[in-house]
Amino acid sequence: MNAAKGFATLVAGMVFGFGLALSTMIRPEVVLGFLQGKDFGLMLVMGGGACVTLLAYKLLPRLLKRPVLGGVFGVHPSQWNRDTLVGSALFGVGWGLTGVCPGPAIAGLGAGNFTLLWAVAGLALGALVQGWLADR
Image (cartoon, rainbow, N blue to C red):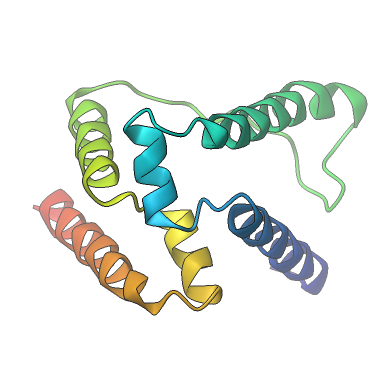
């Protein structure tokens, strides 16, 4: 990765983290309130993110000949299978029980919520175990 791509990645991550913090998505109690149907403010956050992503993925390849920092626009193939279903169900159960999602957990650490270290450790352990199982 060259310096320009590295810098662009850093800036994008900072904007993403700031947005998560500003929207209070880094606070598990706010996320749990949303999941329990008590607070629908995060629906606007997720809807806004989905709209921006949809526009970027559909419009930018039509407006630009190639990505700004080089390379080519590509299509990411997705496969729906048992592993996708089980993984998404486990992710949803974990999110519902704790109110913690990976991106907001890391942004929450940056905001000083160090109790989220438990969640990040669990995320890392889960990814490690999945990697071991996938290698078998």
